[in-house]
Image (tube, rainbow, N blue to C red; front, side, top):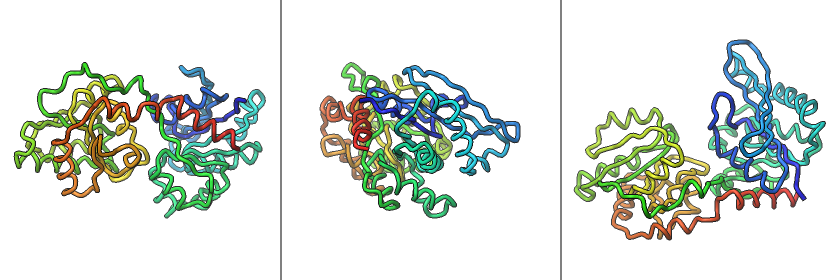
Length: 374
């Protein structure tokens, strides 16, 4: 039996950004394999008027009916926090446009604030089950000072199920809720896009590679400074680094004038990223906090030994055979990069360890199992 899901998110590709955030859309895609699904995305964005509401309905490239509701305003930062207004707009839209033709069983909300708080009220009104998927890295800040923190706890406590993309995030959610139905369902990583390619030629220099949106909480200086020390001490003499992605941290990187060559590629598509990962020797990822970090899995699927911060999915995928997790101190980064540099690894085996764990079918079946238990 196929469940009828209303997949609800404020984080979804829209007319202002066709690629943000693709990881939520991939969850919708995998859910559609075994369930009926309609997507409802809500966007409060900057606009020239005081208040303009609009909507469009599209069928995306995966055949998923997607309703995109927009509120545009010069006061969008204020309106983004007016959750009672969101609820009224969305309740009216669902009642008039979606529900007459699609009587869903489950509202599946993505991220606590503001989505799951609004989703909790909507599920009560439409007498549907409520599932929450959490990706958010700012839960601690939210529960320490946000005016909606009580509403957030109520949404968590009353949800029929909560899924978290990593064990680290699950622990954070459980520290704020007594809900007993909190499980891990990871992000989707497309194995047709990221895989080990034995035909890829290695870079001429011994190349470390890192890829991110270079803004906080990413912390590239954890590995940059460790590599500088290793290079200056002559322990990795033929060293180069490739930094993939954009972000304001890159200016600070350039100003430090490291002694080894650094290549800046800007943003790459999946094919270009895969080629860089396959042609590099080691992957490094420095960060102060993340809920998942898809790039770690992508690097491992490409067979790349990795040295990473203790964030997101790292504790669940990094082991002796594929790299190291640091404790985010300068000395530990120095020691573990050096150890990984001297280590012997089997790229094909590294890649094969993760095959079938994060693909569309596997992640989709996790969600279906949760729906069937409700």
